[in-house]
Image (tube, rainbow, N blue to C red; front, side, top):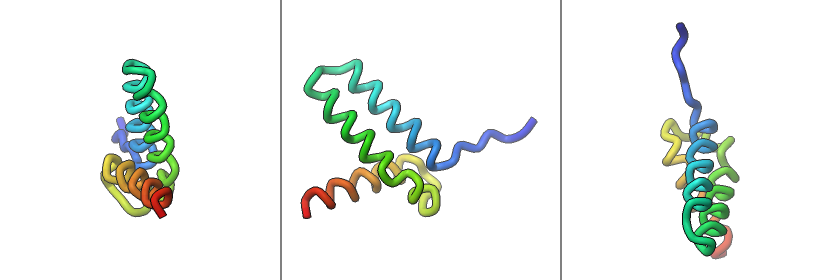
Length: 72
């Protein structure tokens, strides 16, 4: 049997999907925000594949980049 390896890109997708599930389970006003955060996390998932080993770090940096772009 081979090893199971979850790449950072796949990990970011899994993390974003969990954030979306949380939004569906929560309040309506939170759903839109969590969907937006999940989309931000996915925006740079491919780049995170090259830069990070940790999927949460890749997701958070992606969200921060998108927030910084919006603030500029």
